[in-house]
Length: 49
Image 1: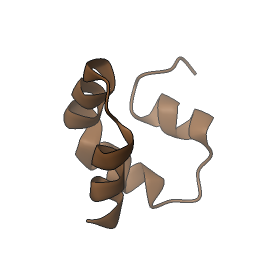
Image 2: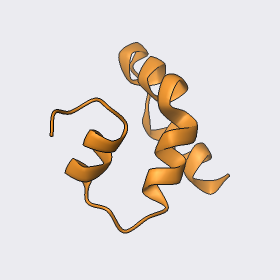
Image 3: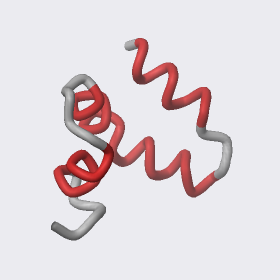
Image 4: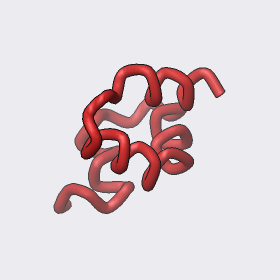
C-alpha cells in the first residue's frame, strides 16, 4: 500500500497517471524486489531486453 500511495503522489501528469494505473500492481511487485530500474522496465514489458 505504501508503494501504491507513493506512485500516486509523485505522478501528476496524465501520461504518468495512465502508466501507473495500467501497471500499478506489477510496479508494486517489481519495486518490492532488489531489481534495478532497467530490469523492472524489461520485466513489465515497457523496455526492450
